[in-house]
Image 1: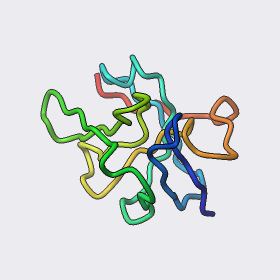
Image 2: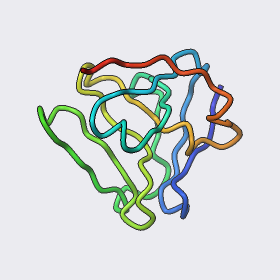
Image 3: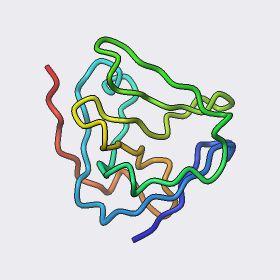
Image 4: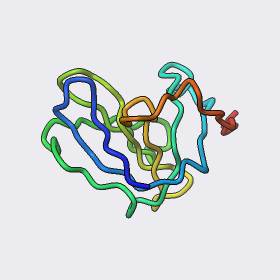
Length: 111
């Protein structure tokens, strides 16, 4: 199914195709702080519709994962995975018509 998503201020908008079958919550140092549940998808199932110039990236430690956030409202929207550069994590809180509090997430154990 295709879903629309955005940051809080709508400067960044995207479309994602997913069946919501893989929902994760990571326990790495950045994910503990942002507490976002993510859907895990291949990169080709994500389309940035608006706001490429409004995205900033953050990398740390191995510098393999690339975390994107809106430079206007600060919301984390998605990231390229360190363990799979062809895979992405997308913040379920940014996806329309999904209540992240109703989703069960498995833990990605990075410790």
